[in-house]
Length: 565
Image (cartoon, rainbow, N blue to C red; front, top):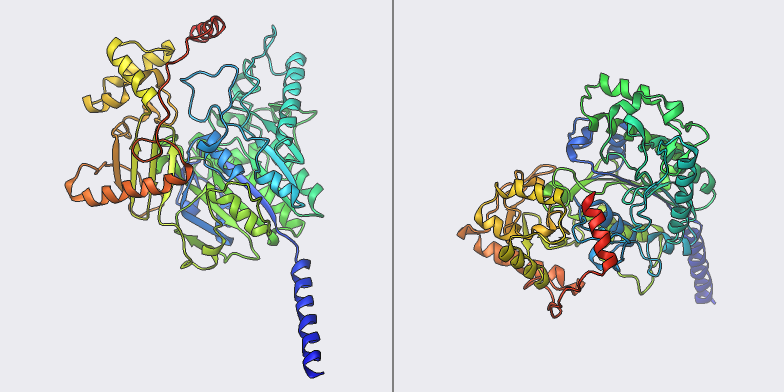
């Protein structure tokens, strides 16, 4: 009888324990992705020059990361990885109506509708999901406004923008979002061919904030996931916009004119301008960062007002660093990252582990107690264990990628490899043989010739694929002064201390580093293996080379029109 009583007591304790766990509310998740933000653009939390008190407070109340990476540091693939948990090279290729080989890396990436992703998995797990702002994962609708009057305040333009926005909203909802606010495509911008006057009024942070607050207010009674994607600081941004007539230009969005400029609980644009200027702002980035910070502050304040902040996982992440954007150097791929979850994270923490945007999906699922589908490929891991215990097991190397460049980074070293596939190499050799640049616009040809003069013969050997001057991951040639080694096939850099050290000297050819180079090459082969992709001697075998198909008459006409522009 004694044993039976003990068993019943134990059983009751277990039931009560499970009930307590089940009763514990699941956390909300607010994921804020900001655009083109350099460490130097941040505020005091990263030693930057901007006035960002709200982001500084997030760092003070949460975790600041010193070694966070965007594994493909460019708008489109970076966003794909955040929302899918996968490397962008895994994305199912898409074909755009005006697809051309000289377009930027990631141009043909879209978030799939037939694969698991963060929003649709969370949606199925009972979360309400919301999207606000810049999508940048929709490659279709490349047309431009063709009316006589392209003024943004023209009713015909307004109707055209609203039609496009409705189409885009539907596409975003197909990816697993219940709510869509202030959507913008930006890559194939709704503003193509539209006159926005001198103010660059495509920036409307208040509209984005209004959408975020509306979603939070509507979702307060159940757990939610909000993906807030700001357009700031993506240039061009002119601080004069903050001084323009807000009643007029605050109505302008990529989804058409709003009935009135948004009323949101943040300082007026004029106040933002004056406060930033009084704090010493002189650059567009400093004015834009203070504006952005005020918007983030409005979201955090609403969460606090509704008593939701303590149990909300808040993430602030930049899609890429600005100075070396589209490169795999520290100035492109290493980015600001802040996290706050008052119930879980120790205030004022600093994480020096190598983390990446591949880790966001596993971290969010882990935080929310969600088991991802068995068929969902996740290339990262949850960050929560190392935030609870800095000595918990963690990765010793991370793969970075962008087109024809791949890299592996460790605590002390980074190795970058440039390898062309056989079909590209054949075209390079054809350029060498003929001196002609196939499928290259006059603007691109002029641009390339300018930088050809700055290259050494060895650099020219790897830069001569000039038909792809703005290549898929072969880095911006405009950065040749910053990264003169970018066309070296093998690049080795020592990563020193500090928030954002730059790769400034390629030491791959130093005999003293031979063993390090060999070890880093082995690590690149190891971290690349799960992707099962061809890449020089590091990946799987390349498929047999195929002769390029000749252009159809329709494709030739389209190419001629594009060249004429």
